[in-house]
Length: 153
Image (cartoon, rainbow, N blue to C red; front, side):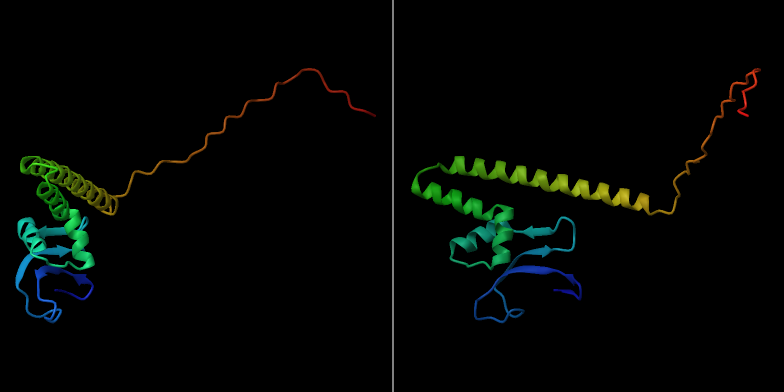
């Protein structure tokens, strides 16, 4: 999606035999790499469900799922299935991980907004006050002596 030099992607579930921009089964999110930081909206529950059903994500979508914690949830649920964790422990770990990640993203967004405000202030056209570079030279008068200096003859 998007246009020239302004990409925008939909994250979809599609049959491998379908054309790249063709038919798809379900749209589970979107990805906009032009914002800073990149905007990723994804339905984590649907993505997790499709991964459990055997969906094979592309490399980019795999990185997005890792970033959003879907693959971490899959890892924790595998531990629940094997008996290493209880479902409550896995949910608690996943929730705390997601909260920490969202806090980092929120910090990055606020930092980016501050950078943009600083940049706009810098290029706003308001000149900074000029500092005069006048150099004041103080001359000390040479000591005057009443004695005449002898002149060699």
